[in-house]
Image 1 (cartoon, one colour):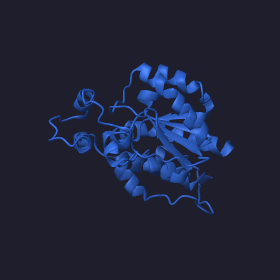
Image 2 (cartoon, rainbow, N blue to C red; image 1 turned 180 degrees about the vertical axis):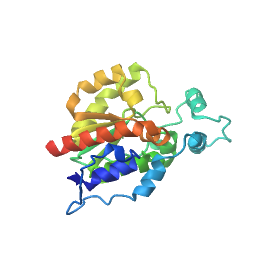
Image 3 (cartoon, helix red, strand yellow; image 1 turned 120 degrees about the vertical axis):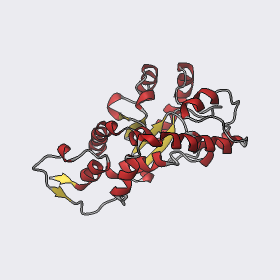
Length: 247
């Protein structure tokens, strides 16, 4: 028998019927702890064409301008943003750090490398389409927002930096370890394989979270923009759900 949540996730990630067992039968849970969002909306979020990349970049640039309070940006792409934002001194202060969801005794801790420029402006993590995708994926495996301790690896830093050097990664590790203990979570969901698969990052995580408790998927925005990442994310989320139920 096949729990209907798998069908929601399967449809949401656009995997096609080939990923379902031909003999599978769908069962509906007696009570669903999650108000699962409309799958069509999830599909729309997850199938944003790559051609919209510049629109996302422009939105982030506009968000940066709101933080900086300066004139219109002259950069056109996120790559240019990343190259040039390092020259902007201390625009991100403790006062502009995004708020985070920190429930006690959370089921999972979900962590990205750093707040996006849009999140900094909104003062909320995963404030855009990436957040829509994230919470719909979590809902598909039975998790509500209050079940998730949401945070980032980098904190109290001056710049948006999705590719921090090793010394910054190491310096941030003790606070991350403290958060992990505080959360009481059963599993660590790492959002961003390009960062969390790095050897230096893995070495730091190993010191406070054993391998069987951590799960890595691409950042939700990458999943939105790259359809080929969906199958792997789906399989990882299935393993995460099994781990939670067994813990």
